Length: 88
Image 1: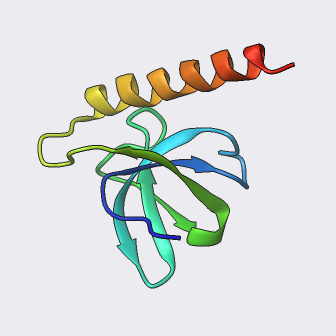
Image 2 (image 1 turned 90 degrees about the vertical axis):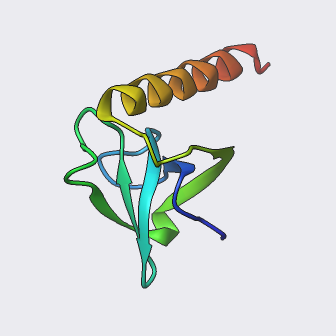
């Protein structure tokens, strides 16, 4: 699994399961994730790399704010819900 800073990821386990986040740091098998709402950029969640799945999208984290992050994760959640509804 190749997760880099700026990768959009989906949580596979824990109370954040099926929510979307952005990786803000990667260290020693752990990824620090934030969504701008419950997990701010100033206090990201430490998550085991095994418990997340990368989405094929990247975000430029240079000028990222909590507000922009909330909008981004909300749009991914909306897209995921639309895809679930379209499946037979």
